[in-house]
Length: 128
Image (cartoon, rainbow, N blue to C red; front, side):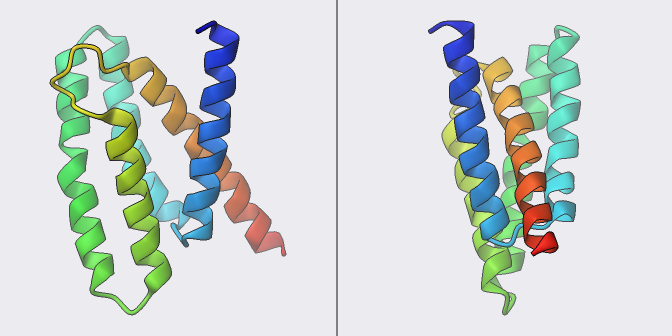
């Protein structure tokens, strides 16, 4: 796959995921709580500490599970759906961190695109 094709794919998936999260009621604050540790993992990855980056990402899984459980017990179905959507995206795109072929660079780019599109679609809703 060429870099351009990969960029287009990441852009399309990021828009799809960002829109899903916005439509599911995932707030900017909720997104920030997840995105900040992802950026920390990205910085670790860029500093050639792949194992540390993978560890930080692995530790996000219980955070997402906790948020999902917390929002499952609330009366707000949008919150629950938003957390479930992000957990599903995270699991599908990151896969098994033990696998040496897991492409973290692509994952970080996808999460950045997802964050950007989520912000875009949340602001579209607020302006309406």
